[in-house]
Length: 366
Image (cartoon, rainbow, N blue to C red; front, side, top):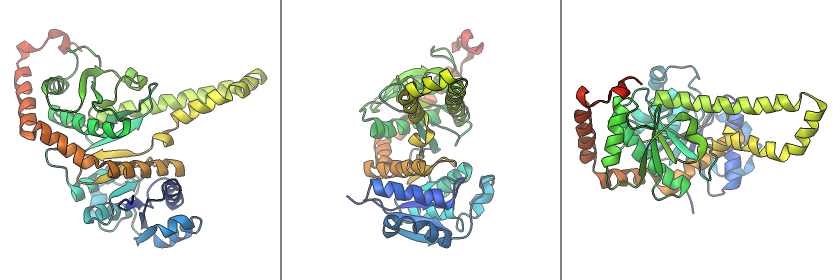
């Protein structure tokens, strides 16, 4: 089976062309059906391809000199969308020259360019950034939004739940993914008004291919009891970085402990298979590839510090979403529920909850 080409922003990321091209080459070796459009400095890409003849045969180069800086403001980058490697990779998706775009560059710029070029899907007000995280269970957990929208209405959160569930059906194989809203507690009385309104709308919704199970706290996200965690981008980004930081803390703590004495070093040799399994499980490269859900096209964000293996995983994510036609799945779910009915349901729950007399006093104290 052939796939539409995947446009790779070869200039994005901390290491630039070498890692991006090496990642694409690794993805190509794993899946020979992949075809690529490599966007960036043609001379540098050609030099990198000298090490990967197999990728060269499956790639076309789109030359451009301009690159979006890592600290560049999205509004500034947006003005140069037609001349930068990031902007041209996204434009290739818009034109149909590629089926998906992958970049490890500036996240804010990538979101701004993607939203302007591809537009949001009918029935979706805002796109959301979704990523996979490891759990103690058999499934990874999808979390969204992770930073694209710092403030979200109840309607946004409900739409995120629908998009996240469609994504989860692809990566977990569950017909009805378990969905929860991130909150400061699992009790129904806790949380902001928007969280309460979103929960009420999801409980009342019929026809959705998901099971809404209420709220989840941040300390249980990775336990394996939920498939999709929905939140606003501000809280989601903080939660994600706290989880990643805790993982690095644990691995660094283990390294220091094993180096502390001769006995510890011997213990490390004995327990090395277990520690290698832990390292592999916590390595962000093995879960690399965040997706902008809700756009008329597939755009995948790779970690800026990703290795070639991490980039290859991001490419694999984009390819799988193309194979499984994620965009059509989301549109079908929205049509099944009915966008107008969804908006009315959220609006009615907001009207009901707007009466202070209906609010439990315990909620106001949280």
